[in-house]
Image (tube, rainbow, N blue to C red):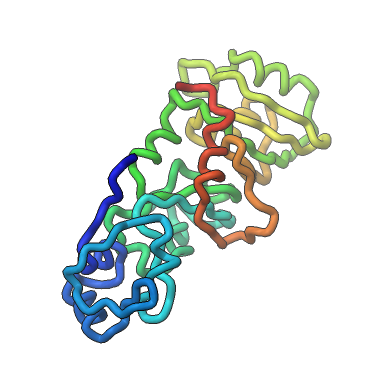
Length: 249
């Protein structure tokens, strides 16, 4: 059994964005930090950082934020960007301001471009982040694609062949699965993530993507009741769904 990590209370709360260590000490001295129903009086007290800590600790009368090592499921809205290099509001602005001061920082697991909506994952766990985005993982990601012109009927076979070359590249795409939903819409499932890949694949077929929405990563689906701009923390069982259909090591 792995040992449960512990941290001094002032360091834990400072790393979670509640303020500097001095400000956290002031919170403690004011009686504003409660654990298991009792007020903590010593900011130096070492706290076991367990998954259930938000259920046991209150700060200023509110449940503690998720401790380090969590994963968020975000319904990314159109117009929000994942990169500081793109213009527009950042997806980080969807989170509480305090969370943007956390150490380790919260990062997106991969990216969706500004004009793509849907399932986006965010975490402060660097090891997990790299495990999910690693090219060797081959975790499938499904997109709902809306097109400008009707499908011609040969797209699915071409995408599945693993021979399609995108403009400006010298390596063919891995096989991808397409399921036509109507003459102008389809599901497309990829196991790699090249720059604007879905849009470029349909451009190579002489078509134009007018709307793009990611609804699934591995076997983890975006819940119908998670509205655009909203988020929630993944459970261990939901996290396992991401890797369930992966074909990599």
